[in-house]
Amino acid sequence: MPGASPIETMLQPTRTNMMSTSLPTLRIDEQEIPFETGQTIMDAALAADVYIPHLCHYPGLPPSGNCRLCVVEIGNRSTAACITPACAGQEIRNNTPTLNEARKAITQMLFIEGNHICPTCEKTGNCKLQAMDYFLGMLDDHFPQFYPSRELDASHPRILLDRSRCIVCDLCVRASREIDRKNVFVIAGRGTQAHLMVNSPSGKLVDSTIDVTDVATTICPVGAILIKEQGYQTPIGQRIYDQHTIRETALQENMSTRTKNDGD
Image (cartoon, rainbow, N blue to C red; front, side, top):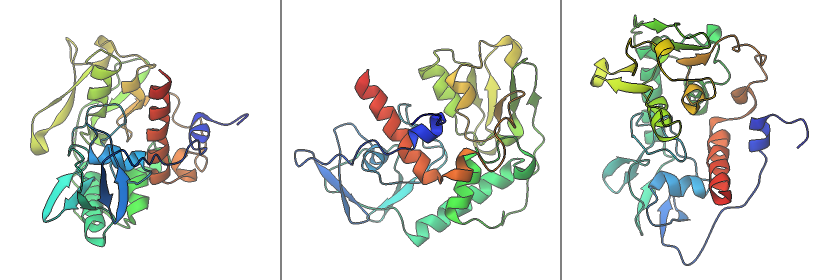
């Protein structure tokens, strides 16, 4: 598509769902889904263009199960789809009012645990947390705001780390380790004390090996890691989630990764 942006190109339909009678199947909301050995429920769902809400999952990276938005029901059991192996005959409930209300509550808690002031954030329109808010029909925060005071790291000449916006999804940790091969980031602490740290002698970005071309620099779903002086290059109203839903981008993100892997 001449003149199209990378995300617009990615959002062009490129293939149909993979179905094969030779593969085992499971069912999600009464839809039969084939899967390959080793796939998780999330893998199988996305490959069949079935969307399960998520923020900490990214195609090709090891799953973590941190955000809990992808929790589905199998019988009387609730489980995170991104870390649960797909098994033949599973009957899975995903798109139900009860689960979506729980997902909305989780999204609300993610908002109030950080300083997510969307109108003044450079990531607005490109933020997956904001897009999840739209997708789930979140109209308010519901819970009292935490207004946390967390360290801002502006030491790097090109990259900003605002921990007050971090949702501890650990995507940057996994991307730096698995793709960039650098181990720039690490999650320290547990529960409400969990926080993102920089793996450098001073604990500052400027003394780390991070670069603007690293996947870890751009994979953040919120505005916690930003490349400086680029926040408003794309006007508000023309950004990813101004044009597309998080469901659309998640399915195409997965499709693009599969296509790239098939070509390697």
